[in-house]
Length: 121
Image (cartoon, rainbow, N blue to C red; front, top):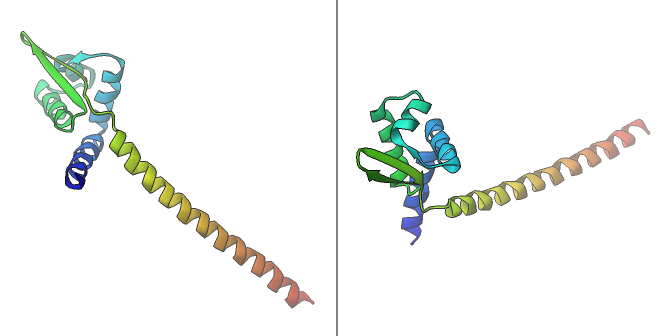
């Protein structure tokens, strides 16, 4: 399960690393769209957009369906829950580290104030 989760996270984050693919997901969040319409919207070749859609589809973020000559894209079955949980765990870790750093800085400020008073006396 851990290996599958890691592969899934890797595929998702790799897919989300590209601005065009994030834009495609935003567009599909509004409505299902054909690859041709996506290519026009993003000013790309049909082949280029197909490659982006393939990456998103392999990550489970987009599903496509071919009806006649038109391939329509929609949001895929994955809801980014694993990715959200991973980000949240790491956000909490960073928050804890920054909180600890804040405490150290505050103690140093207090010590500096006390040491400054002693020197003046």
